Every structure is written in structure tokens, then in C-alpha cells.
Length: 425
Ligand code: GLU
Image (cartoon, protein in one colour):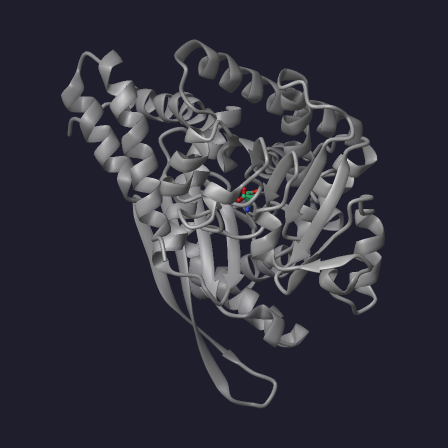
């Protein structure tokens, strides 16, 4: 299995080799790149919670703070059985680039707990979420580090965390807890959330896709396969279907479905919410592995990392891969896809819509003044379009891949900010 942190380092090294030529002070440039290969710090600890059967269980937890040259660390918290320290480190590195790509004033962070939340009751999930908030409380705040949802976490979990941070953390650490509402994003509307945040990642990805569809002259009925039916995959599929594209395949962690006539994501969701799985919806059953190799125009990995590898990249038939998951393509697969002439839009651009609306949420929380949904979406579209246009221009000017073009401007901005701050004692 590919180590995601090693992948993140390889990606950075590839781009650094290109960027280096334009820096006069190579020593400072190299020092900054070296610093960016590992997070500033990784906080780790054990969360002990009482289970419903009365026994106490321990869960391993992390918060990785990668870089804060541009602004406070920012990024979600993932609850998943396959979380590792290396994964959280990689995800926090990608957050630094992601925030840089759309130009929002944050650095990168990420949290994770090794747990299968599907095996927890609501009460256990609440106690685990509270324990996590207490664990990170001394290290977060609106100007320090701002967590948000990620895989298997949502607005309800953020609400429990805000509450714990505000009440218990104040007692335990006897410190002033700064603006709890502005310390977390992705909150429910009732607790200071932003209109449009729920669908923001999927919609942001759709804005990127529509912009590219014009540039690549994709036709309206183009076929799309989406892997993953969580918040990101669902909303992307929803907007693509509404706009007249043909979503022919969908899947969740248990399997998928194919229909040449196209699927209506809303109906598949209703089926899932009624107790079904995506794979048991009407149509031809397919596996997650088969979905990636379908003869479609557009492939959208929207689940987890390392699904496109050197083993299957050669079999991808799509002409466009839009990475809505974080880190779905290994560096070896990336090379194979590039050789095949497939355009791969990297995660740090494709799925930056979520953190962009998180930024809008934070701004609204700090101002105590809330925006209408139209304004949120208009500003989201503006930033996603600008970032996509910037990437496309650089890609055409320099003849590099979309990933390298995206990383070039993202890494350059962070490095330049670090150099501007200086590193002399
Ligand atoms: N977890 C999301 C991501 O990977 C959102 C992060 C945020 O809103 O801070 O981009």
C-alpha cells in the first residue's frame, strides 16, 4: 500500500524541482521546501470513552498542523478505521496547498481518529467527538487552528465539539477559550454555520468541472462515473445530473451500480436512506474497482486515497479525472495517466470548495453578520473559476500536467510567504 505522506513528499519534490530554477537564493528555497515536507507538529493521544455496555475503550487520535505561514492551520477531522499518522500528515500537507490554490488566508491542518464510526451508537459517537475536542482544545482557536468535518464527520459532530470546547475545555485548561463558534467550521446553520456549506465541496468541484468542460469542449451529455456516495460524491453527482450530464455509475464503500441510461442521484439517495445500499439500486451491479475502469468520459474518485494505482491506471478510459477525494491517485498512477493523455484535475483544486465555504463561514462568525446563500455561492464560483483559469493558463504556458500547474502556484505562494517572513533567529 502506498504511503500517503510519501506521496505528498514526492509531489512536492516534483514541483520544487521545476520552481527552483526561478529562485536566486536557492539555499533559502531549499530550506523552505525541506520544512514543508513534514508538518510543523503532530499532536497525538488516546481518547478514552465509556461504551454503552459500561466498558471503557481507547481510540488513537491525531491532529497534524502542517504549515501556518499564510494563516491559521485549517482542515477537517476524519473518523475512519484506516486512519494512520502518515495519512493525517499527508492530508494536512494537502490542506496547505488547497488553501493556497483558492487564495484563502489559511495554512493546512488535519485531524483523525482510528475508529469505525458505523459501529458506534449515537451516544458513543457524541462522547468520542467530545473527547476529541477536549484533546485538541489547547492547540486550536480562530487564529490558531480551525477544524471542520471530513470523512465520516458532519455538522452534528462539529456542534458537539463546539459545545465541549466552550464548556469542558474552559474548566480543564483554565484558559480563555476564544470564540468557540469561529473555531470550528462546517457547523449546522443553527450554530453559526454558513448557508451553502453542506453542498460546497461537491458544488465547488462541479464549478471546476463546468469550467473545464468548456475548455475541453466536452458535450452536455458526457458520461460520468462517481466513486463514493458521501457528502462530496453525492453533491457532485447531483449538480452534474441537474446540469444535463449523464451520471452512469455510482458507488459507496459496499459496491456500485451502472446504468447506461443514467442515474438520478436523488433517487439513489432516497433508496439508500430507506435502508438500501447504492449497489442494490436498480441497474447493473459493479464493484468499486470496475467503476474506475468504465468506458466513460469523466471519472470522479470521491471516496478515499490510493484508488488509482500503477495496477489499474493503465485501464482508465476516461479523458478527464476529477479528484474529489483527497489523494486518490498515487504518483506512479499519475505518470501513467499523464502518458495516456488523460487530464487529471488534482484534489487540491477540485475539492477546494469545502474549505472555501468554511472560510466564508469563519468570516461570517467573526463579523456576526450572515450572508444569503446566493452571495455564498456567487463568491464560491468566483474563487473556483479564478483558480481553474489560473491553473489552465499555467498548464498551457508551461506544458506541465494540471497537477504540476496547480502545485506550482500553490507551493510558490506558500514558499514566498515563508521567505518574506524570513527564517533568521
Ligand atoms: N475536510 C474538507 C477538506 O478536506 C474541508 C476542510 C475544511 O473545511 O476546513 O477539504
